[in-house]
Length: 245
Image 1 (cartoon, rainbow, N blue to C red):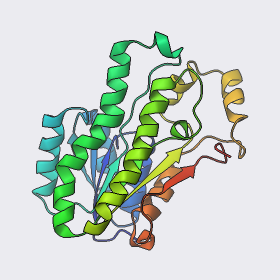
Image 2 (cartoon, helix red, strand yellow; image 1 turned 135 degrees about the vertical axis):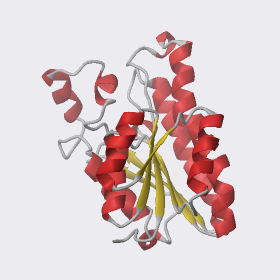
Image 3 (cartoon, rainbow, N blue to C red; image 1 turned 180 degrees about the vertical axis):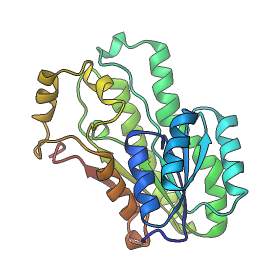
């Protein structure tokens, strides 16, 4: 019950890593807002964990502000997890469409700005809070043909560190986790196609020999967002089975 009495918001919480984080937070005693653009998915996870579902488009300021108003009207937000993310299909960098580029930057980058603008003032006023950004090994050890996705996650890593430095005097900690690809809805997009041969090739780059799981992300997130990590800020924790070594 490391998060007992705390309220958390997880974007992209309706599936994949976000759902794993929401489940772990609830198991550790937190009240969880499950935010997702997929209303049904958010509702399912929220019902499972005894939380509350919120429909949101994290790339849209009006939508994010409405979410913030709904959450903060019910009390203080202790933990914000920026997990929602998207990728483009593998392709040479010059062949990725402008539409795909804009979407990746809007969901992976602009969303962090929008949620910070919506929630940081209240965290500053409270003198406490934890923000967790879900980055990626792609931002640390990029793969070819995912160039603009890699860049968006590199941005998130830099944003995590600068947010941590700026918000530390206000008592707000900011960290990130960097998973390797896992059994989530984005896996097929990362690989281009999902075949046993491509999976084997991908897994060969991970020393521990398996994909990240939602449970892995939940465990790491629970520690970084708990009071046990009260001296930890600006850290990018690789939860990647050794992929970045």
